Length: 125
Image (tube, rainbow, N blue to C red; front, side, top):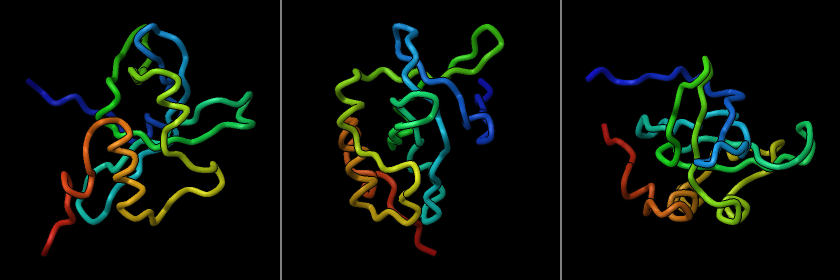
């Protein structure tokens, strides 16, 4: 089976829906952990109106399923609204560029994946 690939540039603005096909938000970016070469998390905007009042959330990439339907790519996120509203996030004008593992670990444990820093330790050279 061939791998399914998705370019990082395709992520920006990709519509996020839930299993009921309801609009949940939009993907904004991927945060790459340079210490181990992994995508630490996806950044998703949620809430607001016309981009005003949006909240940004960090979500493990493995929480998403990607689908192609009617000529469009979609990210499907199967979490309830309450879990999303209580998820670790940040202000859209203040991204955690140099977040420590405490923040990333809180993202992974919130979604039930366990500690990021234990699953993906930094590479040693």
